[in-house]
Length: 421
Image (tube, rainbow, N blue to C red):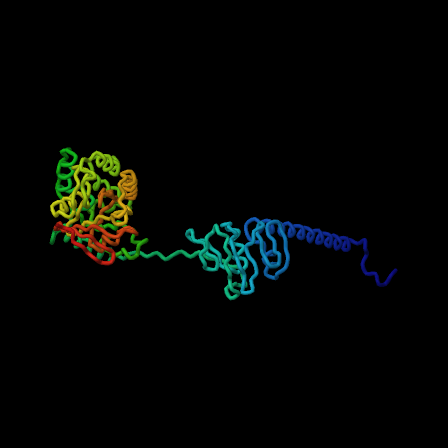
């Protein structure tokens, strides 16, 4: 018997030891297989949805690398055969290669370079690019991060108006409306309901004898524009409208308020729900005085007449027809480009299209004429400054009619020319 032999190979203990070793080996092999499968899955996932980190590392090290979608030539990094990055003596030049995709930008971010698309604007290293041009942007060494660029989304803090702010806003609107309506020391009338005076006008225009009720007061101020999206309008009294208390809760959105205001506006100015732009065009085509007026004119489709703003009586009529507000100037701004009448447009078809464009944008279309040419305009109420602020780009003057009937041509440079005869 060998004195050094201390264990019987046939013993139960030895057999169990061997079994444990075999089980451990099998387990280790399964782990290796599983790890290999996971690595393959990771590679597939990365190549499908994000950058190939081996390709990025190779490019940074100026080494060659090739995979299914990525390639590093040492000097260039390619994605699907398109160069998205290349070395430069001052840094790295990057491009989306004309492919505006998340994978392209994630690859550039993987290089440690900022690349993002926000609200339709794409930036590479904070430089705005044309996504279709494939232009290269040089990123200096100092702007390149050692780590991939990641962005975290942060929710903006909400800003709510306090009860005091709301109360102050209502008081300001109430005082403002009372002054405009000439109701000193009285509550202002509602702007979203048909008042007795409005109903009389509607009855006169339509010929329908609708009953005339009592005055309806507006006792609460409601924003007509979102004060959350327009912080500067939170306390702007021109951004308020007085409505009856019982209607305040009902008007939970600007859309509802806009629909009601638009309906009232149409009822006070139009006898039908047809396109006003088409109605103006059809009537003007048959107008007997069309083309005979040498100066400027404003067309009234209701009476089929051409009104001259330089004549005070007719200027006052223009104010009445197109909703001139008490205490405010009525402005007429044209969208027709005719080089101040030097290149007059006489084609009613062109003007008709512009009138329809105004109507679709929510503005009331107005047809006018100047130096044998025609133009499409819209009205604006307020000070001369308000009128000029709404003057379309490229237009050189506005027409302003004051409450007393005096008419002026307003110029962006501050010049004001009286045209009343």
